[in-house]
Length: 118
Image 1 (tube, rainbow, N blue to C red):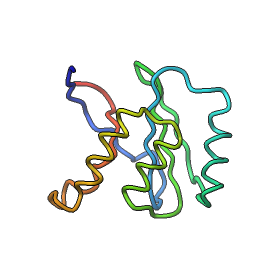
Image 2: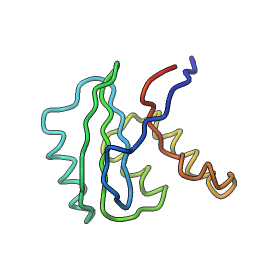
Image 3: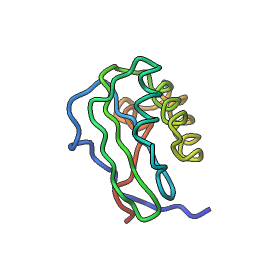
Image 4: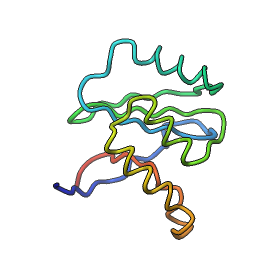
């Protein structure tokens, strides 16, 4: 396994919201992605405020601002349900489960996207 150090992607392009879903897709995104994503969120009674797609070297990063606040484990579950990279979501789940044992300044970093590799 090769580890890469990267620069964290900032959420300055999103409106103030309850939670942000950070999705990572390797390869092309299916044609009806937006429609399926919004449909799944509506089933869960969640309303997307903004959706941002950004091309990466290997695929796509999608950020979804939702109106309702969600617990970290719920955010990770939603990201997995919406088809984000499974390995990334496993790492996010490990970080989210460890939140009670980490310093306060690290508690908002359970789900991250890297803007670019260093």
